[in-house]
Amino acid sequence: MRLSCLLPLWFLVGCIDDVVAQPDDDATVGSADSGAADVSGGGDEPDSGPPVPFDVAQGEDLPPPEDAASGPGDAAVDPVDTTPTPLEPLKEAVPAPGDGPNPTNASLFAPGFTKLALDFEPADWAALEENLASGSKDYVPATFTYDGESLPSAVRLKSNPEDWEGAKPQFVVKFNEYDKAARFRGLRRLVLEANPSDATHCRNTVALGFMRDTGVMTPRSTHAKLTIDGAPFGVYELIEAVDNEFLEDRFAEDGGNLYENGEELKTNESVGDTSDLDALYEALQAGNAAAVDDLVVVGSFLDLAAAEAALGLGDNFWAGGWNFYLYHEPVAGWVILPWDLDDFLIDETPTDADVLTAEGIVVPGNEPHPMMELIRSVPNWRAHFLARVAQRLPALEALDDAVTACCQEVRSAVLADPNAGVDAETFDDACATLKARAAARAQSVAASL
Image (cartoon, rainbow, N blue to C red):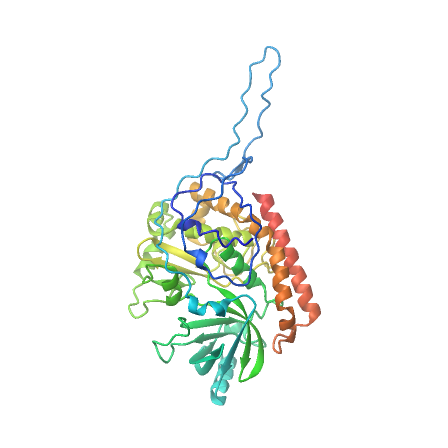
């Protein structure tokens, strides 16, 4: 049974009373999800199981119970209480949810393969090739087609230009570049990831599915087969963009500032007022937990950090990377959204990386995020974080099966991809390695809790 019924914990009013609860359902992670459960709200935490000798609130092992038996003439010794310390409630407003993802575009993100087509005039395709050589991200005109419906669009290259040479290009398809009112089934853009460093084409898909299935508000995704000018161009991962439409679907209050990588303004650009971000980072850099508590939806950060820690991601918020979005919800405060999880279980992220500290992960340029530092240092936030990691353990233990399912689904398409350069042996070895590392990560996290 999928865990998509589990809501984002920061949408719940109240607190977690016990930290040893585990869902009873089996968890599987799919390649796509409607995402409606992300924001629907309501529901209680799972009931707690039997006490365990671990004080999550303090992060320390408790001593075993002393022997209560007494001999003749000895005073009776009371056993030590090993019940975990209850968590204190989080002080947080709850963002009012939107209506959920637009149903008119749900089929784009359905499980399996979405078939997409891009058609370019010869001069426009030549311009895109020139952009590939020069490192430019300028848009060029194209016609986008899905399910018999076509729309004029603009296409640019995606990702770091330093990684473009010799790799299958990645694209952003934008529908309102030339006509600001234009949308395709309610969307203003789509993202096509080529996953050039992942022979399985499953790392990001499985990790995003884990996020959705464990209650983190997450963009939808699935695999796609792309044709360009009528010829097969290969397998892509189709990902819902985090933009104005995403905010309108997920939040009742959707007019706030959205920042990519925690710093680049992506909404309200014409106003250009980023003083809200300055105030947030001023409080974070000062280590002022009380001030930060007034500004952010703490549970949102805890949920994302716990999911990233469970997965052992090396280039995201938990481990000091900048692959995430910050949204300043006008009423409740700051929330954090996941993005770009394609480093899931790569070699630079060891399977035994410490859940709390991320020790063992070495990614050049990454430094601990000040919000994550507060989560580690504020006792109650740390306790909630560790509890939420524990709640995700059943889904984590199911990830090796999710990897198997994804690899089986995409294998024939990847091997037939004219631009992937992946043969059967390479693909199968990569899938076996990812499956083994997923199982090892689950074992490491279970042993640490």
